[in-house]
Image (cartoon, rainbow, N blue to C red; front, side):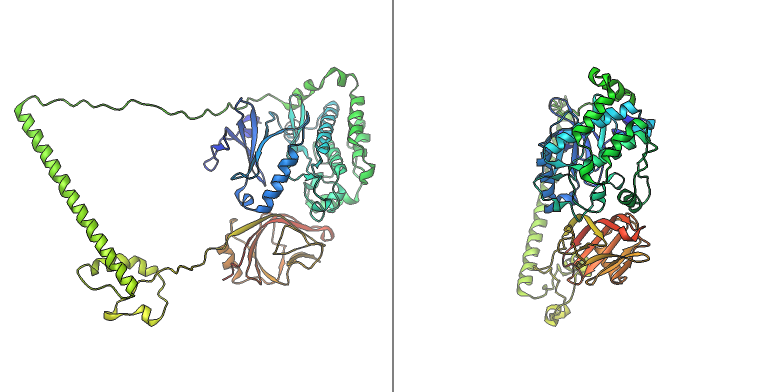
Length: 544
């Protein structure tokens, strides 16, 4: 695997060259919140710039959450975290910058070389536990700790991405009713949309350690509902783990959050097992083996400089004889005459145009048709293309006049504007909640919302107020395509058998609002714990 080629991707045509003074050197990746780029500080230190997607940036509620996350992340300081160094939650678009960590993620390292040896897992767990101590000390619960959010630097791991973290100054109800995270690395209370605490991150730490030792998720892969069912109802199979790691991972994976090991206990347990290596600082040698070949970070992009050139001076040869001088004077006279003639013709054309425009304006004010005359045919031909597409509705007096002329239609000054799209990311539906058109991002803890998930033999979306239409065309639905699809809706019950992750569903509310729901996660294999997540866009009063 060419790690450098995969990580440092060239900028594309739709990538900005500059973000808030940071010149972008390469694209690092993209996610649900936006794109990530490589840049550098003024001193040349590499940073990762995350730029929020425009449809999210237009949502005031998202900006408030993003601002809260930035303020919380500023409080995190630790040797094993990627420090936030700059951000602008009110920027266009919003963005943040963290120190760039030159190294693969744990997920990439395991995919390249396989499971890590026991000493490397111990160093990993100790470092991540110290990072979580710094995060929790700042009053933050990460909520999405997983192998792809742990980067392996030359001096140890770094925990990144607090994009869905929960700040302590927000009530725990923010986390309930909406299971946010990655299914394979969720804690039981997270999978059941319960209260999320610092102990939730310790459960994820145990799963991350097991992944590093096994090379795969401890609870297996497959449909999200199946994985979550095993996490909630089954004991993990620790027999596949190396024996020295089993006691620690078992403590981290206790079903009861109160029974899980503390982070201080985790760090001390790892140091005891590492013995003299911990005191001798043997970690860097372990990390060099795990990280693989070192890669070179692209250099900073230089500021563009202006090229100053001397004015072009053309030296013309002087005429040498009287014949050549007479010829040159004749050419100059002809050029002058032609220039004057062209100027006169141009002024005459402008005068005719102004006069004609004034005549047409007087006719428009008077409400009468244009007076036939020498310019009638010119005006008729000029207005033919506009009159072909312009509406002709109106009273008989507006449409007719003497001589059978037709008055040109004019746009109404009160013409309505196109409905504006409002995005609502991370909408959640399960058997106990529902979604309302008024605010889809606040899940109702009852079944009285506009949209519900119902499951029997199969699962479906149900509504008392709205009609559904599942789109079977290519992704990228618009308001117009939803209007067309909803002209023949499928009713107020939409089976989800034909839907999948990425499917688009148009919804028309009885109030006239039209919504587009893009499914992100459909987990309906086990109906009693089924759920659907997605991104929703609403055009208010858009039905025709």
